Image 1 (cartoon, helix red, strand yellow):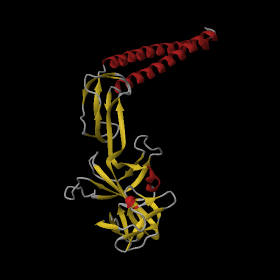
Image 2: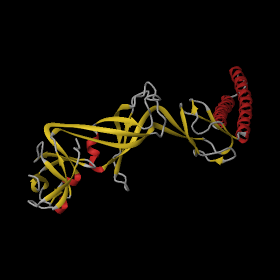
Image 3: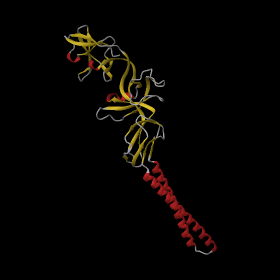
Length: 339
């Protein structure tokens, strides 16, 4: 007799539950870098430090940019002096023209010179503003409140404009990132999600962060990963959740089905010969009969059978590949129900 393992099934209301493990991540992470190139002379933050918006993170050597700003300020003073002289000359020639001592062409020349002097002042003011902005860019400030997630530069290092120096993770909005298998990607959007964070005992869990929290699917990657063939999904946690970034969390997904009863079986109980899916049901105590079944949803380990079985049927769950209909079998184990 072929040894087999069996399971007594029980019908239940249709539904699907599954769980996936991920990590707590901030919704927003910002890479910060200087807007000018230079040598870092000091760093004022460390990894894991909580910062506020506008807080100083690092500073560049500003010697050259400070000299450039002073040069532009001198250019502006010279332009202002030239403008004042040109405007005064324009006024004098206007008086002479009114008395008939000079021609209109002479006044036009002075007026053009005054307009050019005014333009030089405007250009010098803009250049001075640019120089001052460049000088201000030597200080890297936190763009928002959060936690320093990474630092990729140290004092003494020369960095380029736009090169990432620090990353700030904003903790005001948290979510859990998980990888969803390809065959279940379409079912996630209609499922109810709950999150359980690991290593967060009730005694140490903040009052506003329960051990089991409702979650909402915020984002699903439109393309599967080329290696793992999974879809990256992000589930938003309730506003105000207080959790450490990087903690391991499990997302429990539940999708309710219709009113028709189903039977849950382990994947190992299902056979398919290319024509139909079937299982082997114990007929009496030692023989089995082949029974066609309709398989609905599938998870990683379970199959939802919507037709072909009823409560109380004893289904072979292990050893199905070595038996045929009517073959005598010997029961060596009783599997617990998967309900």
